[in-house]
Image (cartoon, rainbow, N blue to C red):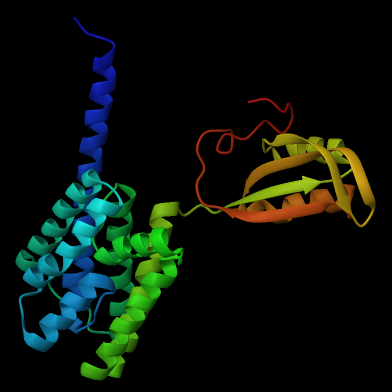
Length: 299
């Protein structure tokens, strides 16, 4: 006999299995970026992995061992800051990365330093992004950033940037300026690819429109652009035309490539409309990906 909770339990198990499979893929991609590109050419990564590489370069300590030891205090911090389950998955991912780095022996793909920075950062960024998206981390600097942000209000990005600025500064002094510069380039590419992997490659823009011709704009967006929207009732507003009563605010989400179209629609109907545009990082539900029929305004 199947109970009502069994389908939910099966879905949770499948979701967890999928997460661990994706984390394994992320670890593999990150290790390719390190072993096939960055490490053979003497480049560093950012964060704790970068410190482990620097220690390996200067003191000839095993890289995998250094990575595990250096990650321990950050994982302890994560246990008290974020969640025990995230720490468990992060321990598995970091141990897996350490094992991959120790055992893998990829052939060097290229010795060109620019290509090494680009493609090493690309593979590493994909690996880190996929891992983070599935609830784990491959580097303790993210945990440190979250901790300081929660206690002192400093942006996570600024903390990680400062962390790596110090690391690459030490590299420039103790190894070479050229290595530090190429490593910085690889880190910037890694950071950008990580963001794209987490947030998605499709860029969306949120648009809020305040206009006395809101009915015409609303109809034009539906028929000409085929995008859905939410309309808010506003009690009153203040602007260069004085006090406005009983206005409506149109809110819609569009693909970045359509921003020119919607601005043209607005300018044609009401050049004096008040428009706010902002980046959107995550979309869930709604009708964004299944646009309305331009002819009928229906699905």
